[in-house]
Image 1 (spheres, rainbow over the protein chains, first blue to last red):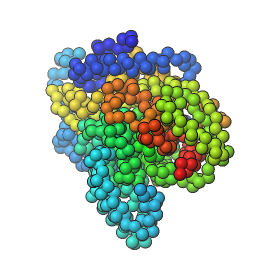
Image 2 (tube, rainbow over the protein chains, first blue to last red):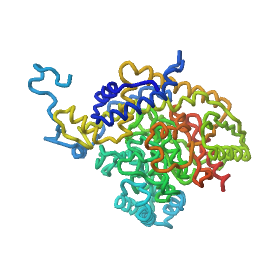
Image 3 (cartoon, rainbow over the protein chains, first blue to last red):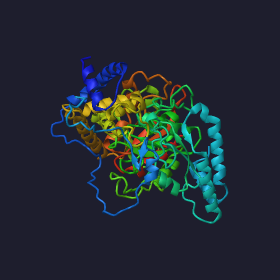
Image 4 (cartoon, rainbow over the protein chains, first blue to last red):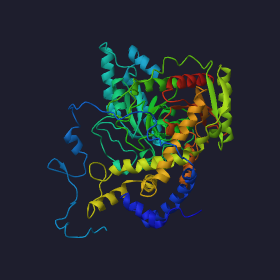
Length: 108
Length: 472
């Protein structure tokens, strides 16, 4: 089996997917994704010149509705499901640090 | 086993109380579900309250609806307001949706009673229900075997008569394959025939909600209740629910049925034998049966395992610990995302997110996702060619009968092969039904599959009912 995907590529994909993986998972996924992509090779090799992709199985067009106000979800019911709430809003960790403009992105 | 139609008939006539029906089913669940584990949540109190309301309606001379008093088991990826909806994932454990799925709203209006939420492979990704974060469901016909998946909980619940009706979702076979392995009827409707509003998304261009029942008649009655246009789902077909119950006794005289050659390849001999017996039975009932070819179907599995993970990787990006479900605190927000998702998702979900993210990433999009979408077009073309002179197609539902728990968990590709006969219908957006048709060499149920072109549910279910009658 040729190496379809390297460990470095898998680590890169995990970063894109916002998924922290253990070393074990990294090794296992490198092997398993390689096997699955091998299986997909017949599809990748098909001659599909002039074949239009199907994004939707039925010929439906964009659906528009009249711009009419209707009741929405109950705010308190929605907030009750959030992991952290403050002043009627969902609380998250700090996203922008005060000196963000001056510093290099720590993740780069 | 009492059918849904018998229960609804008796409750509507006032000869049986909905409350008694609910108590009988709750008692059966209490008796059997410790070993089956079909349910993630049993909604006993809500079910009793709903049953009491129906009984009051009947006593007051009102119309309690076509499914009055019929308990239904809902796959736990269907949103139920205020009732935990987990997708069998730690990432949604304890989450209580602030709204009902459209199918749930319609069921309540029809008098059906939600008796519980059923187990599934996490986020419907799997073919055995072993990927549930809460442990596997067992096959009621043999507790050492899987019920199939991903709608294994609903299929097992119906097979064990814990509920006369179940709803599942079918992205690559997740209604039909467990129906086959558990010996019940399972229908995947035409894409867009049943609203997906409130179905937690896996692969949006393939997902469809559909019925599980112990007979074609009950499945058809359920489809009529949940189907039909819904403005809350922009992919919903602008037409009322297909009328599928009226013609169920009309038989198959004159219908042209094709047996799909490519879907008989690599299938266990005892399963193939049951499909051939079904073909002869349809002939005897007046249908003409011949062999047909859908050449592009052989690429279905590969195309599916690019498209479904790609769409899943996008859909599951929403589980980030911000608005609902699990949150694992981190040093910064990226850390919170990474750790929440690492802890909340199980191995199969991670595998598919990884595969899908890769298939959509720069430089690979056209080679994988784009190419797989072109294969969909090829499959649709091949189906169109065959349907030019055929009404229906016949095929196995699954390559084998129910396999042993743990038999395929170490090798994802082997597990994926369970869906080889069901995937083409999802890629084409066409309807298909699995009908139990005898048993294999091991004495376990075999399902045969009838496939139809888009919106072909009436003729497909009519033939399914005729086939069902040839067994009795």
